[in-house]
Every structure is written in C-alpha cells, then in structure tokens.
Amino acid sequence: MNPEDKPVSEFNRLEHCLKAEGTPFKTSEQQKIPGSDGKAEPFTFVLQTGVIAIHRQSDELLLGIARAPFILGLTAGMMGSQQTYTMIAHTDCSGFYLPAATTRNLIHQHELWREAFCWLSWIHRQMEKRDRELVGNNSYSQIRALLMNMATWDEALRKKIGVMNHIQRSTRISRSVIAEVLAALRQGEYIQMSRGKLISINRLPTDY
Image 1 (cartoon, helix red, strand yellow):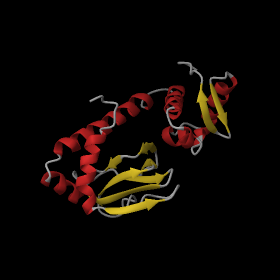
Image 2: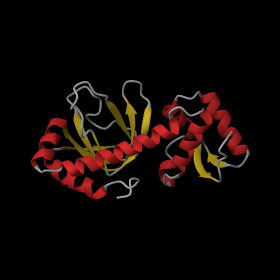
Image 3: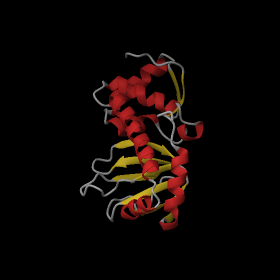
Image 4: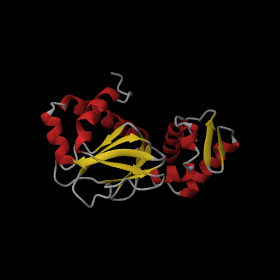
C-alpha cells in the first residue's frame, strides 16, 4: 500500500463493524461535531461525508483539515490522560460516534486489529508529514508548506477558508508576518488570491 494513500478498504471494514453501536450525527457548516468537546467520556468519531477542521483543545491550534472518510479516536482513553480535540464542520457533515471503550471491544471481537493498525499508521504518517513541514522551520517555510497543501484542495473548499486565518491558526505566526509574505508572493505573481482566498499557485520560491 502506498503510505500516502488513505486506507479506504480498511476504513470500510471498521465502519461496518462500528456503525451498529454508533450514534449518528448530521452537522451544518461551521458547527461543532457533536460529542467532540472532550467533556464526556472518550469517543471514537467516524466521518462518513464532509470536511472538518481538527483543533487541539488545549490551545486551539489547528492541526489539519480532514475529509471523509475519516476516523478519529481509535485509541482514545487507552492511556488515561489524553489529548482532546474539537472538530468543526467546514461543509455539511454526517457520521457517527461511539464510546472508545466500545470501539476497542468491537475491534477485538471482530478481529480487526490489522485494519485499526493500518488506519493508525496512516494517521501517524500524516502527522509526521505535518511535523516535517512545520516544526523547527522558519516562518516562510511554514507558510510555503501550508500554501502548497491548500493548493491541493478542491476549489469549493479553498473558497471557504481564508488563507491568512488558516496559516495563523495552524502556526501561530503573527498576522503581520503572514500578510507581508503573502503580499510579496502576490506581487511576484507566485500566487493568485481573491478576497483572502487562494485561487492558484504558479510557483513558490524555496527561499524568501
């Protein structure tokens, strides 16, 4: 399996196993995914349709944008104290959630540890990629990496998310620095933007 490819067949088997015990949800754009406030017991979330933003609850850092199909929380609650996340819908979303303890019991009962491992390995790969692009790099390198990632989104999603806010919430780089870099890239015709949204990237220089 290509490590960059989402393990969809493994997702499908996990979804089929878990959905009978799940509580369905449907969420409108800009609404919080039900149950993702970290105030109750740990949950597993299965996103079947839509696009969400995942924020680290402790400091509201934007960790990334996730598209269905997606599972978050397969290991929730396994080590006692845990990191909690808030998920905000960027489009109309649907899916289901269930207690993480129930998830573990079902995975054990149906012998789906291989599928769970494949999914978690893919999640780990995405976090490694994010760390490589953002952790320890200078401000321009971080901005460049996020712009290149945004360029891979479909046009409908790019029209919903402002470049400035997305970069600032993902990196905590000051808005003045981000604005300066974006202005220089637009002036050099490296990127095209309209009303704060990314239209396209022509070419991004390696260094600023």
